[in-house]
Image (cartoon, rainbow, N blue to C red; front, side, top):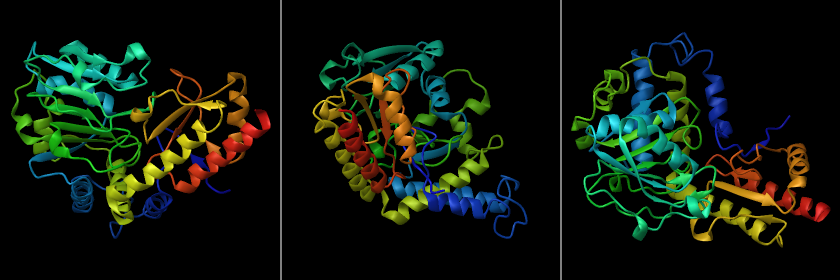
Length: 361
């Protein structure tokens, strides 16, 4: 059977060529005589994989030498818990600009070990927009200011993230990293779970300005210390080596496809195609996000009659369009349009939506 167009928000669709390459090396990697899953992470074969993945990611995202690149397990939520431990002194405030569910989650993860403060929030408006810079109330002595670049559930994305003053800006880019050009130097820390644009679930990228690694932070075990992880090249303990390998294949695929500038063009076309179909549906479909803050990566939408939701999902699956059910927080539908989603997949979804509207409108 042909592969479906998978609109899952994560674990998300991977490029078919990457999956086939990973499949081909599953049993035996190069001349190692063993699977990539079986070889030592400290052996020459895997170290070459790890170093190449970092070099390619630095090229893809134009990461300067003054930033360390870590590959960690535990997902972005674990990073959120470790941020104050590594970068905030005991009792020092940490500011959070909350634009959706995952911004609230970041705040929640930091709260047990930090004076985590809401500097701004768009929750009162249902997370349909980003909090404007003039509404930010920043602490003068904040350890950092945290933002979520793209909200996977609410479908809200920052087009331009404002400067945060004297405190370093920390940003969760889990669902939009590598979807377009990114000026890493604007941030103290950029982090992203890989399972949306960079590879499979189970590995996280943390890009951190090296001077921040010199902060004393708070008491923590060495395995939770980002400075120690940087010194050990992300190998204080056994890393998720298969996930790291597939991430490396995915990053190389993105470079071969033209890099972030090309994906920015593709993603803009895909998002416009779907939003245009929603807006032109005469109210049969609706997206509630302020147009200027609409995400290119995650498009939540609602049918005019929720009683049609189950039928929409069932017929979409029959048409080879899967994982369109909205998050339980919002309901409705959601289409995730990450880098690996081809334009043909979005076109197929739009055509299905037209047909469904004609049949049930």
